[in-house]
Image (cartoon, rainbow, N blue to C red; front, side, top):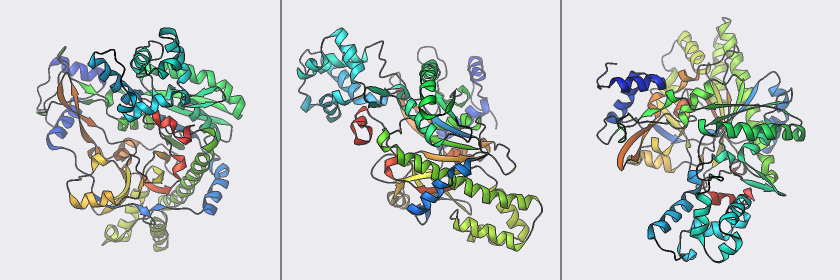
Length: 519
């Protein structure tokens, strides 16, 4: 690619410090000009057509096989945990800022304010954060319960969010109290440790957890996990091995002006690079050396009384992965050892159609026996993922679809931003989706020889999208890299399995903690 943008020497020095080459920046600037391709969705994945629905008997059978399935396999539970909790408290922060902008000492009538804020104050005693807020407010203003009764909400919010000790808006979500058990407040990090001990413990009793964190919060994560490793090791008869990584600066993407030119910061004229979204974590996942990796978001945890479904279905998904993998590995070894027969090819075709749901008409049309064997060897010798899918009950999240790429159809998790809703056909397909992705994945990262795949080779670079932000009062454009479970896994072997909604309990706003599954 020829370089067309005139970069300053200090621009090039900045890129070098981040580990980003000029060609990558040029490619990103070109995306602002031409845009990303929309996903070529041809129909939603549904039960019997891309989504496997297991009977209770089948699920129990896979769960029973779990311990045997994982023997000899190394396991890691991978948890993206980088985000600050700002969005959790967005409604409260906006409410506080609105009050301050009015420059009045009169407290508002809560019932006329935003519903989320009303719910928060009406139920404040039920939040695991209550004790922390109570203590902070008591030091500054007096009794919290009295202040709430007197509707002194502005004062409470100012005391809470101006606290140097609480850091609520900037604290990572993983370190905020989500659940309370007889006085014990647990953060999502602790809940993931407990989950790991119940479905990601290897045959030697070791639980390997890996959290991706922000550099500024690294020490806090280490401190918390060091405290609870000892506690939970005794409680759950497990040895915890916990590691951390941060999003690499080399995965940052350049920001652009509305005119598609590189955006420069007002204060110093430096180029603006922004984090590339969760797709940047493909590099972190690629550095994990394990046979089986469980992937689950930091905020998707539930209380103890509802955890059994999570344990059960995670074990079932892992067993399905190992079972599928063993069959694929068998085919690949036979091919590699020189077996060539119509019988083998028939076995492979039947497996791909029945287990993987592939329709193989166009793909195999006109291929010779040799070409067919090469086709299957290439398509099956890839990383594998088994993804839980939940019935769509109005929660936001990517959906499962069949995509067409040339003659090949594949199962993909597609975000709304990747769909052209202006196209009536695509809009109708999207609206017909019955399930969505709760980020519940079990992944196989090694090939039939036991060697690690280079995951960077199995992503679709064109599956990113452009978002619009503002900085210094100006509109900017930003690039989201192909999402970790979207375009970053575009060329993986994929299975979708229906899981119950009880396994999906995300916390996007603080008031989600009032839902029954978190109480």
